[in-house]
Length: 372
Image (cartoon, rainbow, N blue to C red; front, top):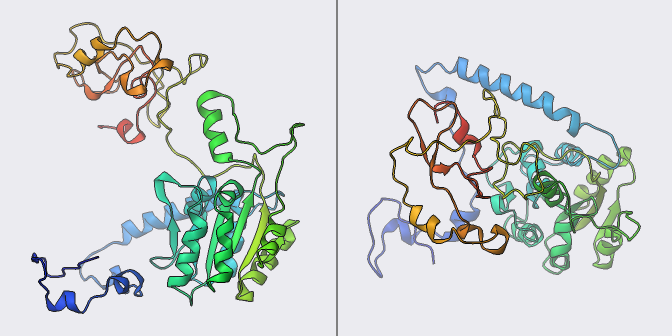
């Protein structure tokens, strides 16, 4: 049950106001969005400099994006099918993005023009979410084209749910970016551990393994195609959009083509066999020199550490691999970064000799900004 209170007053059990009587929760979710007033309607405010800066940044981004979005390499980059898809869809079409590289590429490559037309699982990036979510979106907005874009690993999590697009009368277009594996996870493994395990779908001889997704779609009663070259990409997508029926398009995607741009890094414990800059160094950041983390001298800071007792209690743990990360031994000395003002410390960041997830290699990008 959803209770919408528009005037800010509280309601007791069983009480109603005129605003709540006439407001349907479903209408709040599915009603067409109200137009956003144009900024230019505000009088006496000069935004020309700000808007010029935005235009310049957008142009810079367009130039950066074009190399991947407009590439005709085959198998495709993650971005190339998204540029083609935008060109054949109306502005009010709904795109539902799967997890991993696909989700990042959609965020960065696919322009959206209306609220509620870009649906994504967000930061948790749950695999298997996109297919049923796309069917739900089509049932909620039957007059809008709905396209579900997802990777092959994501598709295989809930592929049986494509049957709903037939049985529920919800004609969704499924675009499967097939790179024969969990490439987003492979990238994370390589970045953090310099190896990858269980993330490529391959035959014993190392050649890529993949189901025939177009044949799978047809077995569900869905018109399906596999794109075989760059020249047939747009025509195939256009054919699916114009059909008005459930459709599936398999798009071969290069395993090693660059995915979305990923700023910053993840906070993972670094294995002992890693001996390069990932081990015990502050990763590079614009305006800062990569500097080894060093333990401040005893007594250099007067700030008490509330975790000293906890650190002493677990100091006898023989190996961090044998105990949860939350209980790893830590040195709770506050970390003094080289670019901090004299005497300043960061109370939540520690200079740590043990493989502490934050102390050894975990500085969020936002915390490295000047003055942070």
